[in-house]
Amino acid sequence: MSEQQKKQRKLNVSGIKSVFASVVSCLTAAWSSVTGLGAQLMYSPSLSWMFGFRTEKANIIGLRCAAFASLAAIVVFLRVGSLSSHLLFLGFLLFVGLTLGALIGAGFTVKTENLNTRRIFQVAGVGLMIWTAAQATRISLLNPSMALAQWNGIGQILGIGIVVGALTQISRLLSGTLLLPALYFLSGFAVHQSVGIALTVVFLASLLPNLSYSRQVLPEPTYLSPSILGALVGGIGGSLIVLRLTNQAILIAFALTAMFLCGRELTRIYFDSLPSPQAEPDDNPS
Image 1: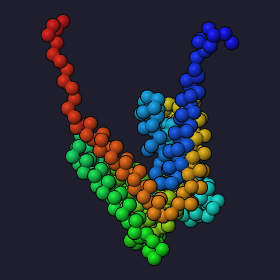
Image 2 (image 1 turned 90 degrees about the vertical axis):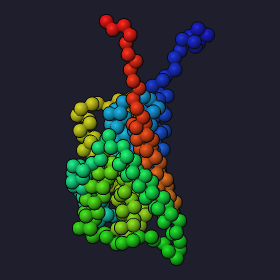
Image 3 (image 1 turned 45 degrees about the vertical axis):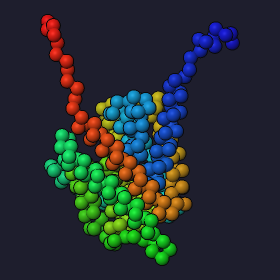
């Protein structure tokens, strides 16, 4: 190849971006399997930041990845016995309760322009995560569980879902922020079981938006396929990792991640509070 041909040769930018998308998808999916939070909460903003994707396009790919990542993790949890058909059923009931709660709370949702109330709720979310992390540090061989109640019957799980769904909708906290603490502290499930049930909810919650988005806008295939591949690998890898982590490590990882997400929302609220720039008057109107 001549020197002139080498200069004319162009980089495969799409290929490089696809590799980055796959790697980031794998990492966020793995972290999702560890914390029980939806992968789209971290992956969709990454797509907008790295590639400049529009919000809608980033959400489409993020939700697809969340569905595949959570499904891969659920399969692993079922294979090793951390999840059972009964727990999957409870996850379905929880999803139904969360949906009902969101519908109930929709009429009381904090309005976008009510910045002070939004800020209070996000600060409360940070406080809850600090409390969760503090409780995790108290876990020991003599005190293996910090559960406050054992509300894990069918009606109780449905009720917890309704309350958590309504509170999440009203407060505008990101989905999943209240779910894992509720499963562990109020229902008394083991941490690994709580993560598995939370991922079951993530999978179910991502199905309908995926179907809706697929009918409206076709996702970019150049980045969608590598992202899904990364999500599958990350979901499997993360679920294998979480099975080797202690209860303390999982709860602290969840608390720190949710705290970061609440902090991100606080940053958005701050920028929303800044006055919009005034247009300079036209001295020579036409």
